[in-house]
Length: 366
Image (spheres, rainbow, N blue to C red):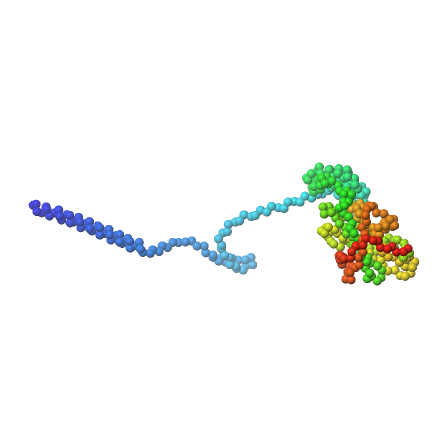
């Protein structure tokens, strides 16, 4: 009995060893199979949504078919808000029609130089609209033009007290008048003057005579000048063969500013006067004497006040009975001959290179 028991134990050990070996073998095969499967390339298919444009038949208003492509919705862009332009400030309209008509007539009278008619019409309009800013401002302009500055300031002050809401654009204009004061014509003495007159005698004219005067008007660069208030007068005088001094006909002279616009870009502006003496028959010359150009008196006015006077010859003003309003040194003009190719209809005269003269030309014998 002991012999069979001793054989059972070894057999059990061998069975356990075989089971363990089998498990190890199975585990190794499983690992090898897993390793091989990991080396295989796998393809995975996924579904992706794609937007496809589809042509949808549509009908136009005329009944013809047209292809319409359906597009994905576009997000709406908010509209750009543009700020409106500011409303310009203007002078308020005169409510009373009678006062408006009187103010319009007064402005025409003021521009024409009839200040008394302008004041009469404005006084009537003031009765119709005593608080209208346009009436008071126009009264201020008329009194300022006449030199009655205290009354002008009172009307400007009335407009200024109304403010922007009551006077509109006239508020700023009245404030500028009160702030800057009123310009006096005497304030422009030395700021606006006459330069040396250049005299061109066209010797090519066979019948009659032609003289071209170039009158420079220099200005101080810092002075502010109202072009509409400038007036340059040129009185031309002839002398007959009998020794008489005669003021020439105004219709014989043509005055113009050849260099426009008048901005004093070069420091001065030239004024051109073309003076022509028509030819007379021998009988008229025998009776009245042959007339020839003798000289001129040039006066510069600003706001109806004389700023400068130039006479040539220098004693012409006294001999003609027109003494200059401003005494002082008179500039001798420059006498130049016209070049052969001079065109009297050209806008500007060429600058000759003939030196100025300081001596008076000999007077014709009486």
